[in-house]
Image 1 (cartoon, rainbow, N blue to C red):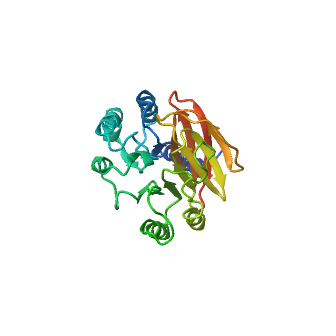
Image 2: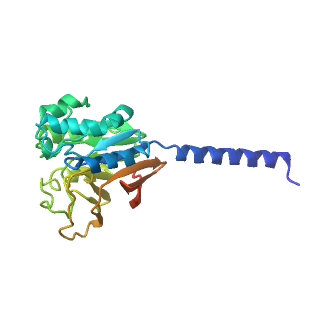
Image 3: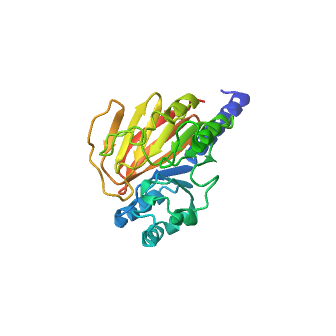
Length: 274
């Protein structure tokens, strides 16, 4: 017969286990998607599917609209996203189709200079950059980025960068179109960035290079692209409208990718480097 003391210890262990499971299951949800542009029906389907996962924060990888200087394009965008924008914290980055439009800056109230900024959420540090803007060493954006990476809080578990043009891709655009492998990728590697999310190519792609995941999530409503070439870094390429769902569980970041019918098209885990 077990002693009362051993029964008591067992009960405490079970309670702690249940509490830990509850904590992990209630981890806040983050969504990332991009290139929403012209197919408004598909964009609406992606938003509906994404919101069914109840994200608290949504990031956008750029090209929110087709013509950033056209007010009508922004009206379509807000018709589709208005309910979402009322219920989540929304953080976009500038794509090339925004055309540096003043309408973009009128529509969003973002940190820092609104072109590049960072936000903290659930022990994750998100860095949003403007890959249309000069980011070579010595420029304002480069210096800000390095200062931001140097000043991370001790409790940060993951560093995630988000901007429009991908350093690694196999779609139809020129590979590393903006020359970012020579400018900011060395900073990512030096300071232990865990993942980079981009748009520009209208598909989903997962690449991995030098212990960093490079994710293209450009399937929000723009015309979808075929894969055009091979790369030793590319692991998955899917031509489908989609969004990415992120949840942190301790030292692991779970990434799931769903199409607008909520079919799972990719999933993987990132282990914290800190």
